[in-house]
Amino acid sequence: MRILVISDIHANYSAFEAVLAHCEGEWDFVWCLGDVVGYGPDPNECVDRLKALPQLSLAGNHDWAALNRLDVRTFNPDARRAVEWTQETLTAENTRWLEALPVTFVIGEYTLVHASPREPIWEYILEPSIAALNFPHFETPYCFVGHTHQPVIYTIANDSGDAASALPHYNEPHKLNGQRQIINPGSIGQPRDQNPDAAYGILDMTSGIFEHRRIPYNIKAVQRRMLDLNMPDRLITRLEHGL
Image 1 (tube, rainbow, N blue to C red):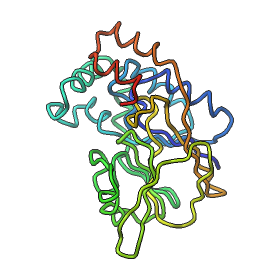
Image 2: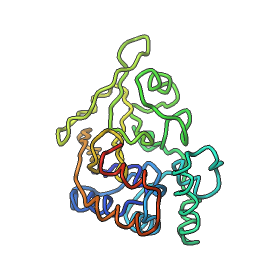
Image 3: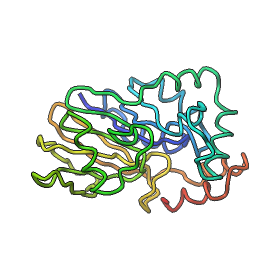
Image 4: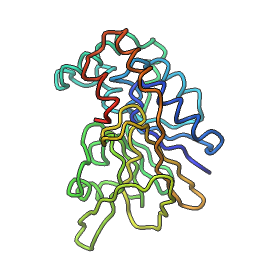
């Protein structure tokens, strides 16, 4: 079975559709690692598109914020404005769908979370030292995470439990050889690695191969929708810079 592994769509329907078109016919099932909504102008469109696919989806911190499960006062002012707008915009049906999402899931050799194995909603794995602290918190060989919006692979580097990080080689097969790994496919809707292209991954569960991918999309169209909705300027401009 081939899995489309995605995360952090963030209500960016243009980016989501670009990814689905780019890998059309290449996958059998979707794993979504959370943050379907937040920041972007298309929360209902993204939820509707995702839930119509054969998928397993998790909750992220922005999904929880939209449900009032997090104190939005902890968000920066721009993110808080986007959360409040999302709360007002989501349909009752899509709100109920988000409410039912789990925060972690284990399937075969894979653990799925949004943020980290030890803090599934909120912790950012941004460096090897944080990754090393998380390896004891899952039992499977591999763990997929999102949340940071930065594609990366962390592995156990030595017998002391230290971790090492590696940036992806896009469109090249990465063999899952049994060595424990934490893998982030990157963000569809709001990359933050200075590359504005939508990021995703394809996992072949039969051969044990994962492939990181990037695809450009119509950023200007998303920015126009955000301008029309009077969304914060910072959220609009950052899309074109991948920040």
